Length: 157
Image (cartoon, rainbow, N blue to C red; front, side):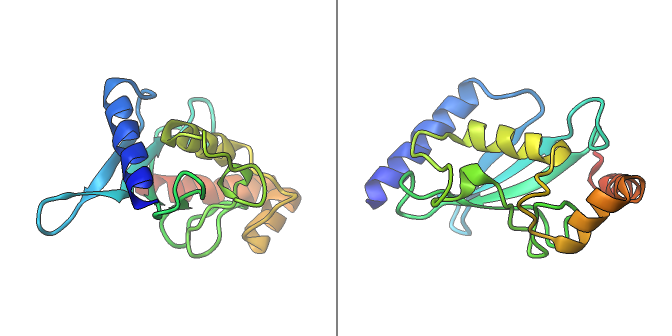
């Protein structure tokens, strides 16, 4: 299986270099010995124009395992990221990232990152990862937006 995961990720990296969504960043980590770690990617997702996320570049890590693409990567924002569908650890709760929900081996890195970008401005209150932030999103959207905008300043290039 290890060969399958690394082979698929090498192809995705090659495809990404040729064509990827504007403003997005996705690249495998570099190990201390200088070699490429195809199982760990550092990414950044731009905030969508016209949303409270606009202007920010939000860091996300993708941790693949040897069972990829049969199993989805673990995707994380920085610890404490404010969003109803992000755990305090930064782990992202999104159906396409769940093996028991909508994950399919055909889903690509590009589709993962576009899905996460979409989730930023369109939280799913029916599947909260952070109950406090979800309650704020539902009950006091103005305060939720204020907190997100304050957080976003940290991620403006």
